[in-house]
Length: 147
Image (cartoon, rainbow, N blue to C red; front, side):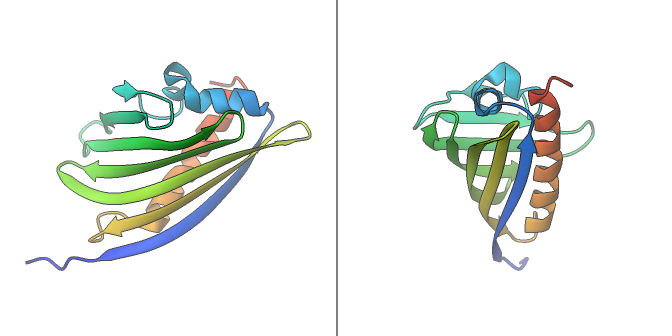
């Protein structure tokens, strides 16, 4: 039997975008806008208690399933959701994510905090943080109109 274990971790990523909090929030709240920088959702119910579900992956690579539930939404200020991430039929993590949007001169400061439980070495805090940095870079291009 393979060794089973859980590693817990938290990371915080900050970005400042030259776009209003309304525009950044819209990029999370609208499924068409979100599909430009995240996976295209199969289910998208952006409300407290709502669910977001997407399934996909790179050609020839593993299929990832993202299944999130929205816990708190404060328009243009805060998004909090919990989610599971599966690779194929294997659950690799469970997380809570908080996105804070703060109006600053010339745009929006985004603070992304994720607290996760990573299972059996299938995913790590470092890999998730790396992927989040890439995702937030793409989000930045979307909200300033480059994508």
